[in-house]
Amino acid sequence: MEYLSIILKAHFGLAYISLVLLLVRGFLAAKAVNWRQYTILRIAPHIVDTILLITGIAAVIIFLSYEFFTLAQFSWLLPKILFLVLYIIFATKAFKKGHPFSLKFYLLSVFSFMMIMLIASFK
Image (cartoon, rainbow, N blue to C red; front, side, top):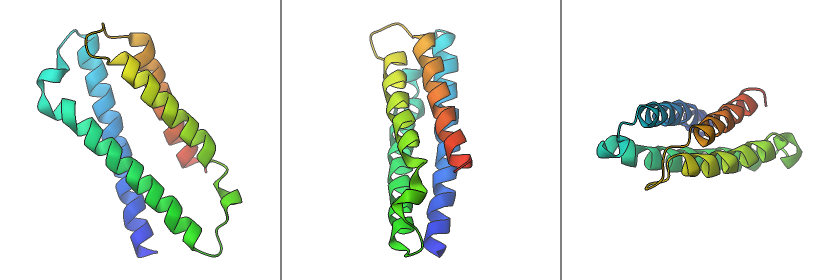
């Protein structure tokens, strides 16, 4: 259980970092500032989101390895995955290089991200 606690804390922390990076990029894009000129804003979201996904998968695998957890207890997982896919689609459309910033898709990506966090907090 010690590993699970560490993985979950990392997952939660990474989720907040990912949200902050999304909000900063959206704020700068809305102000017509080229956020891509900042290496940290160009690279960090990919690294953080990849580790976030890995820790999420690891947590589910660890949960399922315990005999007292069943797949039925993970009914929250499918909606979370659905909103994750929507978040990826909307964020990609909002920040697509060579296209104007789309506030609509940005707000949809923020909404999707918040739904992921809401589902996670009420599971």
